[in-house]
Image 1 (tube, rainbow, N blue to C red):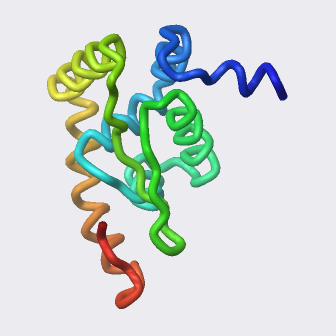
Image 2 (image 1 turned 45 degrees about the horizontal axis):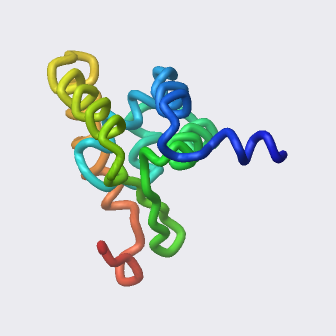
Length: 130
């Protein structure tokens, strides 16, 4: 367990690039580039089961690429803000690539449709958007 904890020190280039080396994690970051997003919207948009999405989001969080906020039973993820210039530079390039990639653009369009459909499923009254 000690090695696993040591592996995820923020700011190490190998950790950054390991986190970005998986296609599913890139797809998740692509969807999160549109703003804070609930796990249920990510699973529905990507057509991937919730445990797999949660596992990849946890890896991105440990690498310092995403932040999470619990709101009742919902967990919302968003891109993390960075002070590390290497991380900022790499993520800026990644965002630029995502805006030009047809597959990534298609998934962001699909997320907008899923987002509207899922928001109707969320319980009213207890849900506050922070």
